[in-house]
Structures are given as structure tokens and as C-alpha cells.
Length: 143
Length: 101
Image (cartoon, rainbow over all chains, first blue to last red; front, side, top):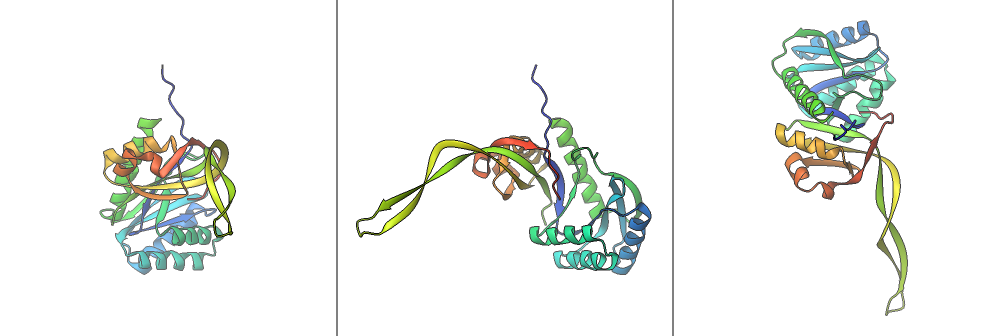
């Protein structure tokens, strides 16, 4: 019988028009605060929070933005939140010219799971969730 | 704008060794050349694929990407990668190491 492979690469979702945040070493309360503040300030309509591991969260906002506006928003949060991990992530996204968030499991961390939803979910959040579903299907088929 | 699936991480792959040779040209100048040898060496590196395309192509491309390691940072259509994976990567295996997204 053919043995199933256990791939060790990481699968993620990359987009330029979706505002995404990778908030590491931030408790859920802090993530929620920054998500609400950003959503209100930039009129981003809605968001979802995903927990990638303990005190590590991802935030995806609903409104479609341009790449320059996207980076303007992430720069604003990274400056105000004083989170060095977010600053590092922001610089890396600028170099790549696209925001990436992990979808698959990584080392001993499971796939990020949705822990909070707020506001509208009909544009970029919906898009993100459909790609996430596709990636999970691919992992399931390959695994 | 196209949505992309990123496949990234650290890998171990066998790459051909390039040999440096010097040649005396007719005009007297000594010129350096690089020659690809048959010998292979194992290298540890990190790379990344950015695939775009339809669901079926993406699924096939990711399955291929499990065996073909990326040559640095590769952005390619999933369909194109499925047709010619050897153009964009070399054979190897992914290894578990801490990498940032």
C-alpha cells in the first residue's frame, strides 16, 4: 500500500486588496480592541479574528482596499500598537508586495480557527473564507 | 486582483555543483567560466511559491510543490507549474523549521 506523505511546507493565503493583520504575543482582548479601533477609523465594515495559537491571532477585514491603502492601515496599527512582531510582519509584507496569512498547520501549531466575527462579512472576509476552505480541501486530499 | 495560495517553508534539496574553470583566450586574456557538473550537493534553504489560478489547477500545483522545491521566490500560474514543475523548482523535501509568513 502506498504510504501517505506528511508535507512539512506551509500553505497560506496571499492578497493585496484585503487588510490582514498578524498579531503575535497579543491576548484576545487586545486583538479585539485593535480590530474594533481599526475598523471604525478606516470604515472597514467588518472583520473576523482567527486564533493561530495561544496569544497569536490573525485579523481579516471586510472592505476591499488598494495595496497602498492596505499598507497605510497596517503601518498605522503597527505604529500605535508598539508590537515589534507586527512591525516585522509588516516589513516582510512590504518586501513581498502581498499580505500572507497561514491557513495550514505549522510544526506543532494547528490551523488557525475563527474565534470572533463582527459586522459585514460579504466581501473580502467571504473571499478569504472560500480560499481557506479550498486550501483545507487541498491539505485533506494530499494528507 | 488575483488571489494567491502561498506554499512556503524550509527544504533540503540536491542541487548540481558548479565548477569554476579558467580558459586562456586567443587574445591572451584569462577568462573565468562556470560549468555545471553532474555531481550533486545537498543544500538547506527556504523558498516560496505563489500560485494563482483555478481550484483544480491549484490543487494539482500544491501536490507537485510537495516534491519540487522552489528556486527562491516563485510567482507562477498553477497551470503552468503543473505542466513544467522542473522549470520552477528542483527535487527535494520540505523540512520542519521555524519560518515567518
